[in-house]
Image (cartoon, rainbow over all chains, first blue to last red; front, top):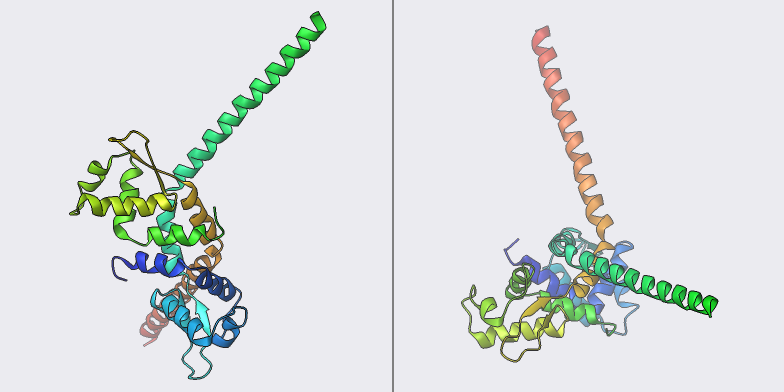
Length: 123
Length: 123
């Protein structure tokens, strides 16, 4: 792996068709013909996508000449997960702040409701 | 968010300088000048990278004309983490298989060692 393998992986994943191919392969190995079926796409176009995925190490292909089934390879995806995990504190904090904000709003609404109720009882 | 916001995010992240900028911003907000300092890069080049990050929603910029500090935004990173989490079983399984393989190898080595020992004792 070169130091910037992560960029190659992220670039390969930055395409909805390639992510759809990976999602299909998550269900088990498949041939190019099987992979091409759900897409309105020529076989050469699918082959080009597979080459990008293979270059990034996201898939491996069998060695039998005609029937070269593709398989998903997990390692580059783990590399992405490990990288993004460094930033987890940011969305956890954002959600915690949103949660705190909503609690304060909810309490304000409750107190305002109670005041209105007391006001009505007194008058 | 458009349906393919994830591709925009992954494409923005597929560059080591942009990831380095995000890593710097993880430590706190910074101006373009501060962000440019550690890179051997012109200000317009850094500005272009910031525009890509901003377009993907990975950073936001302050509104003061001269001093427009950049801040990291967590949501698109969470989207990446959520997407990649679907594949976690694959690397967990790979590691489990590797672990099982190593145990078998270790047991073989142990047994082979014991056989050699018994053999020596008998002879």
